[in-house]
View (cartoon, one colour):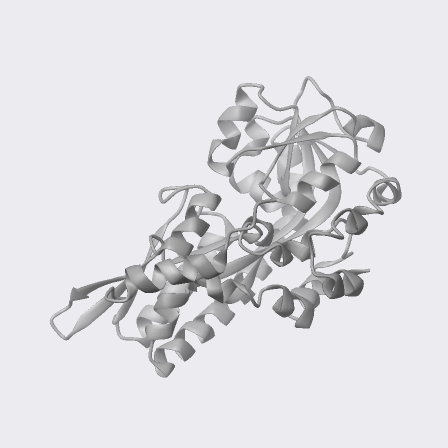
Length: 331
């Protein structure tokens, strides 16, 4: 994994943004209005976007319109990698993306994605709201990334095409060409299960599946349903192989220029948005399996003990990548 040099990034940002304002400032007649662009790779119905609509409402109301949040879903501002690099470089102001997608800037950030760490949402939320996750994220500020909260993306599951057939066991994973995000832990998990992971931006995934470029893909249930992946995949295996926390972030250079009052407003709004997102993801995870069956997907429930055994040494594989103390806590 190529880790960006955040010290160099911070130096460039200091030089390039020293005279720049936060976001885009416009004269509202009563003074400057701060306009912040929030970009997302998924459709507007995705919980991360819906929750950010609440964030927008809370911030704009509490600031009497001094801070305006403009939301751009469906990859309008780019794929996840573009959105995160946009935060780092100052081109995008706010986004939410899987923690592993930030690992190019600090590998430790994706530590919560190790296979089968959690058996429930409550366990996962306790972890990401705790000290281990905070420790894993501590270096992001030097990359111009300020974490406002932890959205939820759910537990990742495998879908396959009609020609491949359903997944019922680890044997059925052998040789599958499967799309994954640029997340080293998820990719390694797929390799340990016998599949062949290949990276592709989420914004290009549906067309690639339609064109038969992959045998399979893996994503949480709400993502599969809300983005219509059932239209191009026939089978869903409830593997829950990796928990997917999303970091809800803002540019650090913007954050530093905000008043203490506005920082509190933004953090309070982010906390409400986090609760909204998690409620939506838990509910949709429970309810959308039936909806996916109604859309024609075959749903299978493989023996997860077999999957856990196949991936049991995943932590050891990354002994030279992650902080040793963090890995010990994971173990």
